[in-house]
Image 1 (cartoon, rainbow, N blue to C red):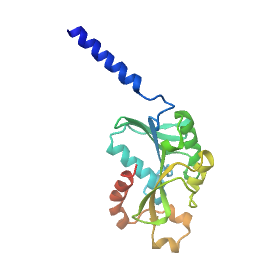
Image 2: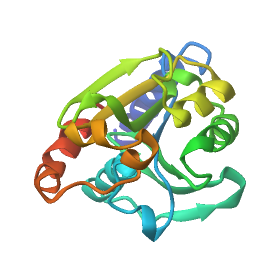
Image 3: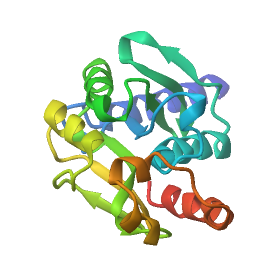
Image 4: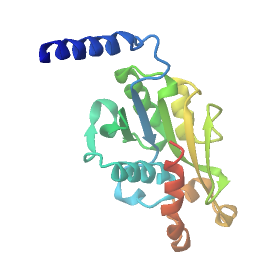
Amino acid sequence: MALFQKFQREDSIFQLVREQPTSSEQSESFITLIVGLGNVGKEFEGTRHNSGFMAVDAYAKENGFPAWQEKAKFKALLSEDFVAGQKVVLAKPTTLYNLSGESVRALKDFYKLSNKDIIVIHDELDLPFGTVKEKQGGGSAGSNGLKSIISHIGEDFKRIRIGIKNDLLEKMDAADFVLSKFSSTEKKQLDQIIKTALEKI
């Protein structure tokens, strides 16, 4: 009887495996790449332009990901783990913000991803501070980091946009503004803003 039950279980397993769609039939990849945009270096920590880094750091911590490791061939800091049965690769490009596409292209090619498997989290100068929006495809909205990614892989990837605009922008050059640090008042709201961004992944 026990032997018969064993064969039944094996037949059931075979049936489950046989009925799984082939890779060409699957609507989604087994891997999701989440890229946070920012600049590596102590001088850039806590700046508006590093909102993407902050978001993937928070995601890694929330989901118990292993420590970041620098991978030269991808020009990025990486951390990988499984979330709800899906392999998730987190990346922070080390290329500097404006050349992020070099890293994203290398990762896309290595993991054999389509653009629908890629999520980019970045600061958005056109959105007021405290605003978080998601967008599938589209242009760069003037972001050099997005321009770089688009030039390497095209436009049709998901973006999670973290607004950083405030009244100070009118008094500063945009390049200086994005590299400035969040104010003490803004810092008190950052945790909730980042949480909102992660809910859109």
